[in-house]
Image 1 (cartoon, helix red, strand yellow):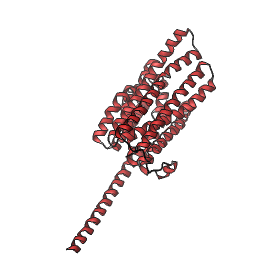
Image 2 (cartoon, rainbow, N blue to C red):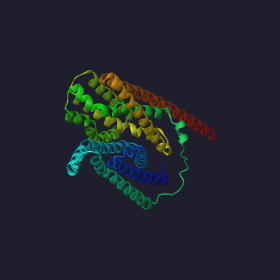
Image 3 (tube, helix red, strand yellow):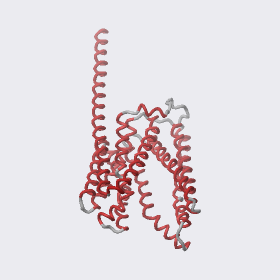
Image 4 (tube, rainbow, N blue to C red):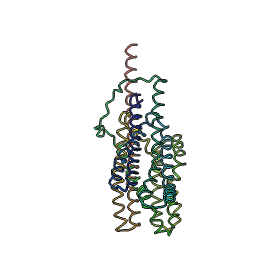
Length: 373
């Protein structure tokens, strides 16, 4: 198991990144308040570094406390809370802006700045939670009398070259799948207005249904995967369901609520089953490196795909964009199938090796007993 100094280190990192995110949200809001766009850009740039690093530290901490099948439920709960925050943000910030506008009696950068300051309260709440976690962790150290020694394992960035094929396939699944979800949601509102003639309010509602569904369903799916296991099969099912939803949106005029609800369910299921798989294929002292690399590749992929999606939308329209997203999902599906066979073959080889070792030991034991007789 992971030793206590590593857990302490991760908790401290979480607290530092929470503080970093809080300060930079205030800087971003201050830039809006004083109409300093350069300050807003600087705040958002560094905010991205702190926010993504916080996600890595959070995943590493979860893995340090919860083992095996428990991980699916834990990651489901994490996703649920994140999606609740996303849904609340999508639906409440506009209302807060309107209330601040009524209070100030004008629109503009001042109204936006005060609105962002109010939104920053959630960052303060996150920081308080991190500090409470650090206190509870320190208290647990004293109560459980955890050892304060060296781990014996050296954590290096060069661990990346030792990552297994299974882990690289997980990275590919992650990048290709999320590339067809997050950019689509970012561009989805106008898509529903143009293709299905929805009003702005209706388009916002259907566009946020993915996050609304994932909030309650993620813990449920996490518990289900915990009980039944077979993470790869669940990931495969989620990818196929996502592909079906994109095909429906691209080539049919069926009620889009069906496809979006299907996408919400599939998204919830994939996150619960995919992210814990990292802990099954890498040594525990490399978990932070693995999750950090996975997060980095995901963000790099999203940045590139977002630019490509915007270019395709401007030049070709939404039909070609949906075909592009479907192609990304197909790549993810290919990676899932490859991961399934790699896992199957690896398990089979390990089984054969175990039989060989067992038979060798048994044979030597028989010879030894025969000799003694």
